[in-house]
Length: 126
Image (spheres, rainbow, N blue to C red):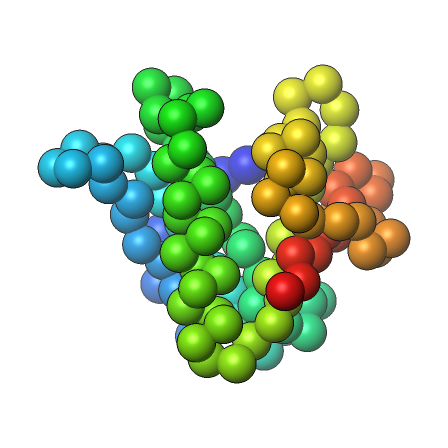
């Protein structure tokens, strides 16, 4: 289960490794994105690079390119810093966001997360 934005913001405030921003379309809030730099294992993330901790797009904006645009902006920022990959976790099953991430070029790493291995690690490399 994915935490709501309030929980995510609280998590970020207690982590020295989190970076988060609101996503806007014009003046309207349309989503939320949060990254983790992978160096603070107390957060429960075992990734050795930049990890897409949260990406949430409000219902009215889903399917409109807002999520894709946010990921593209993150990738450009990471490229400028000499970073060449972005990790994420992806739940599996009928409501999985896997097709979204696959269209962007993310591929499974073979690593699983969660008590029941219900989330697979994916990575985008450039």
